[in-house]
Amino acid sequence: TEELHITQIITIHYFEYTNTYHFHGESHDFWEFLCVDKGEVTVTAGEKKLTLQQGQIIFHEPNEFHNVQANCSKPRSHFFFL
Image (tube, rainbow, N blue to C red):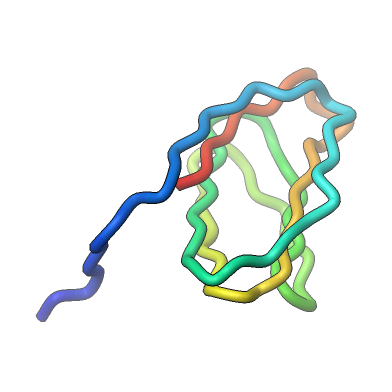
């Protein structure tokens, strides 16, 4: 059984942000994957608010509003979007 089929990658971004970083949010017509490489972030996914730590990921489905902010108690957060 094929569990995941990726037909196209739009962009890949790897970021390191200070502990005060906040992205106000967006939605779009494709899946987005966020993985926390270091630190901790708070993510809004639709109506849910989640805290992700190093090694955790989230998938945002098409047209789902989402945003992210670095946890101010951590010195820097590294994460990437795909």
